[in-house]
Length: 228
Length: 228
Image 1 (cartoon, rainbow over the protein chains, first blue to last red):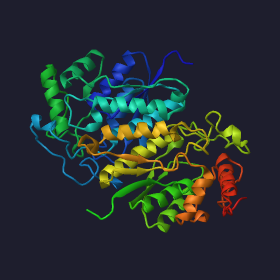
Image 2: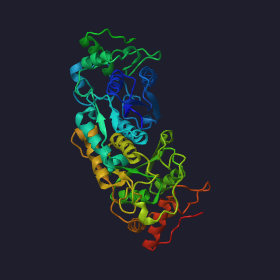
Image 3: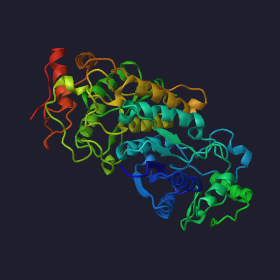
């Protein structure tokens, strides 16, 4: 047994998951970061994920599959990413950037990895406050997945208990940024844009860019993002 | 809207899932079969899956990812598949052929496909009776996944209800075979072996082959399987 308990941390390369990685480290876990190459148009985030994992000395794996074969989302199909949506519209309804069952798929792989490496702790950076109205970012989703994990696995059957940690779920973007700064997150190596340019500059206008910008402004922290 | 409701049916190419496809057709669903190329040593089952989907006129998609990068199972890592285990030992404990979180991952993809094509019905051929002791083949697992589906998705949030159909869950292998024969399943095009030879002959000795053999014998039906 290693001295530290292991945690599987979903790492997109964005602001939220980088902060979650820092939080898991602060809580004393040995870090196993997990990213997904699923045909997302903002695939550049995988480079950011690698940089973030390196910065925290985390082990890092990338699982590849192609959600484009089903489409159904502006992030994986040929549908325009909405730009300049007013903030108060973002939590009304579920936008076209929603990828069907994405977090369910991501957490399922995390569960498989956790079971394989002997971890009972999975961290995910979902947020139900400054978010885009995705069903799989809500507390009831996290709770339902935790229940599932405990009946789906050998560890669960044998009486061990999985915890799905969603430490950001009730935090504002500004709170997340302040917490991350305290924990040493370098946000200049993260990326949040859904529709970056070929040279990796953020569009500044998609929901994700807008939430990020607003977060830095409200936190009173300079925004290190390079916008187009 | 099409005349028929759509169902997503997990199809491995084995005896159970072929029967489930027949059951879903009998219940009047438009069939969308889904298979997985996950680095399984018995990858030959994908050819069987294609034959079975064709035989039922089902649409068929294959999703690829590589569970070998994590290992942890005799089906995906360099661990010997157990042979000639007595039947009464198969339901004691969880064997090395268990693939961590496999059915959770499969059902998560099925949920994404269902949501994309506008289906609320997912069929899976898990069996809790003549089975190998896998935690993710039990009724409580199916129930937990159904609960998850209804909070994880846009359809669920909007008040629609997903059903995870596991019609074989309390059937013996012999009952499954008799039911499948009634529904026109040609079992000669299915494959169940965990460790087939390069020319696709079944080993006859792994848990899966033994359960299949016993099922045909108990059903009083000639076994069309080609063994080594």
